[in-house]
Length: 108
Picture 1 (cartoon, rainbow, N blue to C red):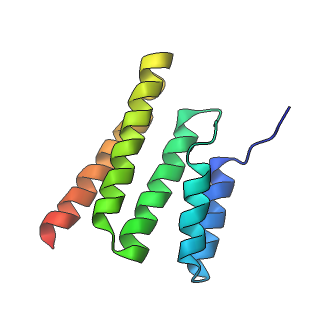
Picture 2: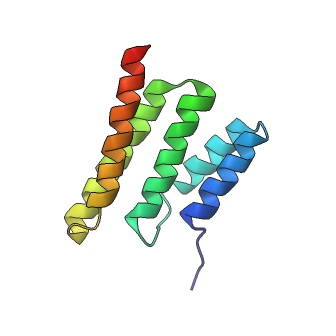
Picture 3: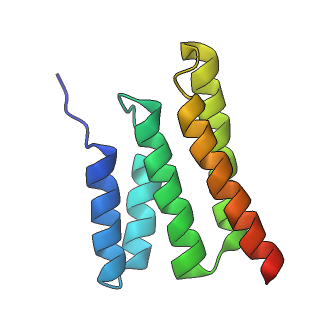
């Protein structure tokens, strides 16, 4: 059985890279791992949320963050369609993050 890194490990490594000033390395880490086959949709959501946060905070790329959250929501909805209601909690988290981001964009 092949082991895949957990979302917790990926997001922790991304946060470490970012805190060390290696924001491009963090961005690349998230981009490489966002499409991994995670055990639960919640894990993919965590990576998308971390990537969106990085785009907004470190790169000032609000549109990139919106794009990532939109992609996360589409993936989550696809997962929900395939697996029943399992993705609904994740989609709610994404919708809240997207609403808060859009509010910050409107305030600028």
